[in-house]
Amino acid sequence: MISCIEGAIIFKGDRFIVIDTGGVGYKVFAPSEILRILPQLGERTRLWTHLHVREDSLELYGFLHYAEMDFFESLISVSGIGPKSAVGILGVAPLDSLKKAIAAGETVYLTKVSGVGRKTAEKIVLELKDKLGAGSVSEVAGAEIREEGDILEALTSMGYSIREVREALQHIPADVSGTEKRLGEALKILGRDKKRP
Image (cartoon, rainbow, N blue to C red):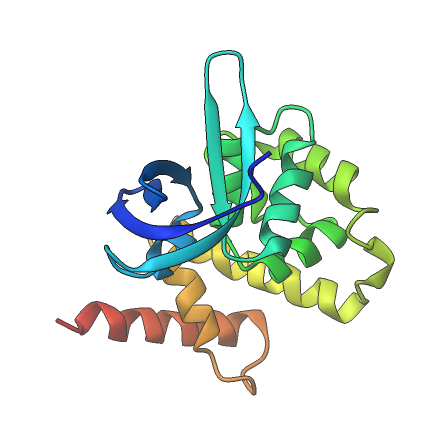
């Protein structure tokens, strides 16, 4: 099993990178957010990896942190969730938010991934809720997750990408509370970003 890989990035694609380690180029699939923040071509990186074995291929999936890889492996342990869906789920929200949402029984992040419908999302919640410490999520945290999910739902239905919405949510001042106020603030941020050249 290949647990991690370190080397120079020799190619960057939309869904994968190629890392040269010891003269061998390894194609490593990764969530879009990870691909976006990786170093430039020619620079070195180190990724935790999961080797996914199928009848007709071997695919390597890479993550910056062990916790991301561990969560990916939990996701693909759910019947009906393949590695591509798991990578998609990891690209929807920060890992901590995903874990809290699943522990709180919220499916809004999961259903934003192509190929993951309501029933599949509910299955993920059912199978992983206890593993992720459902009892550790307070009512306040659960309400915050629902609020963030409602804002995500509203803004993506207006045509904003998940990445744009995530970035806007991170820039909302901490003293702004309530779904409507936070939604309004997110729209202001998104409007300013669209005006920038």
